[in-house]
Image (tube, rainbow, N blue to C red):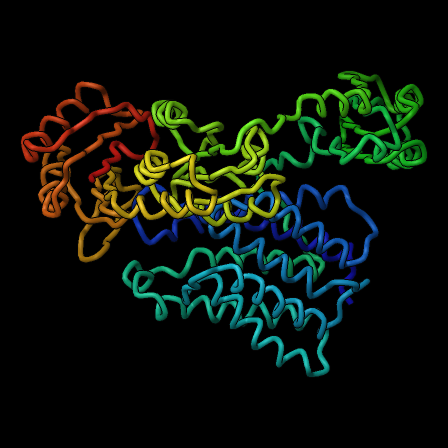
Length: 537
């Protein structure tokens, strides 16, 4: 049987495993543009759960699974991270009410996970992480009917996932063309490998320093729904510089004592220091007991009841009907969105996808009853959609895949309309704008018959690599020969952080010469990764 503590340790092992291998997963990106962040997104997503698990003990597997699913949902980043969170949410439903899991329960949970993931994706693409999870679950459901152990059932699920992963290039032509397997599917396999290794008594350790082991602070423990929830009033923290005369059984005695006078106890012992956090009504006793182990530094005591009252007083009051949250990277773009009426900017975009929790926090900062969210990136839309169920506001996600689409949506916002009507008008409008981008090749590759060398300039039209050049002027000219075939009355040029104003003006002049009747505007975007973002209407 797999107990709650075992499942907890399996999640931590999985997080360490993908953290160790995230760069190799990132490298599976089929496009050579510098946005291969699937491994990073999945690692950050499951690490949010692992961080929570490090402070949990002796709970049923159903409770552990629910906590994992909740943490994954809040920490989900990118499409791959959101799908991973959905799989674990379904697994939690499959384990509901269980103290521990046998083989059949485990197989049922895998199937439930697939149902949750597929149910939330509007147009599932086969040959991705979804396929890997589904085929593995279908086969495991049959296998678990035999007289097999939980370990063998999990190993079989992993084996089926691996076999399906190897077939993904035959399911998606773009994978075969790039000669890679699906990155999200690979991430899932790495996570499952970490879990099985732990089940076999060989938990994966992180190859680097894990911040969650010794947190910089413990603010995440000081979250309460009401003042009545605060049983122990004082959040007490300190570091013990251990002395040679300290009790030999490490810090277990200290932990045991602190648990007797409070809760939310975290005691992290790295051999030379002990970092402590506890909620207690007797902070003096917490300090006095720790003096048995050494001298104290960085002592801090905060009255959480007073903090709660202050925080409640700071909560934004709803004072308007509509508000906007927009994702953007770059000072120029952020200022542009603010000037157009966006309440809160979430920093992020390509290579730096914000989490669902980041988006929820931004929504809650607004003072609006109805909040429109502009993801402005196809890999952020799913995380934004997950924020809908976590926010106290009426949240409507406008499916903007690019910065120009986000700007067009704002230009077509009509505050005289009801929320659904306003959303429909903005959604209809974003179809009229075309987007092109200029970036660079992050690695050598061959894509769509084009030989690409690291560092070359790439021209993307609607997200697809369409031109490869060494000269910026040549690239701009070739791109706009194509882009202007369908006309263009308004052309906006947003130049990135590595482009000078004079270089941007030169690019503007090239485009003006090619489209003399168009209105061409050059604006500082300050965005990373992309030298230029163009909008054509």
